[in-house]
Length: 110
Image (cartoon, rainbow, N blue to C red; front, side):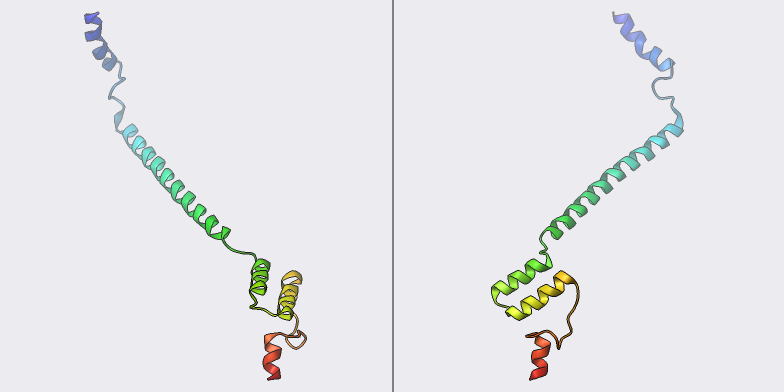
């Protein structure tokens, strides 16, 4: 048993299993390791940035919800609310002189 243990490592080295891989494999392994860690780090950064952007977008209210909230707070009159809601829903802007109760028509009357 002791003789086999002493013969094993020199025989394995004689077969070229330990160390005789040459400088080419060392360079390939180093480049492969750099690419692996670079991909891992870039993937982590991309994941964090994408997660932050989604988290920030999640907090934004849609325009109709903002309009409803401002109307409920009393910041808009009923006419302003209806005119703004019509614009948001239909996508067409009414002329300032046609909308009753708009701020621009009130300014022109003064």
